[in-house]
Length: 73
Image (cartoon, rainbow, N blue to C red):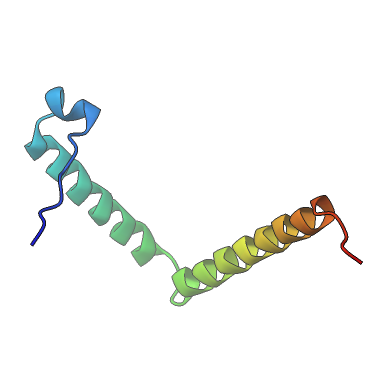
């Protein structure tokens, strides 16, 4: 089995690992508290809206690629 090499993050020398873990936990708790303030279903609708925005961006990129490619016909 091959072990994956973990590349150290540039800030690892400056920020203790314990601090990073506390910041991650704080972020998760903050997100949960904000979601608790929102009406039920809001998060699911927000995710659906984000997905549609990304699909719209993808279609714009696809159209731009098609215009940039030479026509073979």
